[in-house]
Length: 371
Image (cartoon, rainbow, N blue to C red):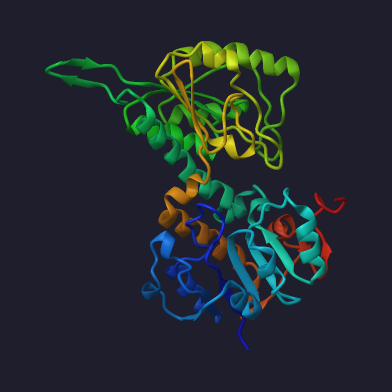
């Protein structure tokens, strides 16, 4: 008897992605999986029902959950869907384990194995499964496009009969995946780009994309490749160095984030007040509190002529490509757990151990066992 994989229509506001796209569903079917999906699951992402093969269509999310041995999602499904999952099944997706953790504990006691894609360890072997990176690529690109749309300036240098227009100056804060994509996109649009990251090791990547690294003298890289929180002295040192560069910027793309914590505050009200009228800040970190003191999540505000945008759901603005990458991330991770058509959760595997939140009725991830 083959395993059944379920695909839901996402219901979170503004969510247009789908966890598994049609080509990936076809690949999973070749692994001897049966595929069930809620009608219209991929329509918002650009994948109408007619494009799918090897799929059994069901009317409701609850029907999909009842049949699924593996339920794939983009965002955590509603409680009534989760309650429909059977003991021994597996839930995989971006499940926000740092939020409403008690609900996940209840699901674990229900006997459901829980695999939050956000927990995929940052090791070379797991790069093809890293949802945070794949979706951050979309976010970095989209942030620059939004900045170009909101800016009163054209980004490239143009020489015309009416005179020469200077290229826009962009500052990208944070040189992770989103920041590097923002640098590359801004460069393609003709901006002069400077970038800042509290990890000194990011310099080589920044400069390889044609941007200049802003040196503040602060290095806060951790062993896992993320950035730790700064001390008060380091934060002040950073602020003093950044302020002069922000004052000259036409567009600022801010991407700094710490997994599981509020976004670090980097751009103060005083910095904004020193910026030029007509300059734009796109704060990718708006969903976790924002890097700018004045950011309002989901809104665009204007302070002394400076436009501050706090976008939400950036990856969902390019749902087709975002879904393609997300699907491949899930496929690659499931490839470690599906052996000859059976679900095998090998807790000795470093990738599975680092990603698995709950299994056989208990919370098993070391970061969450005390919660």
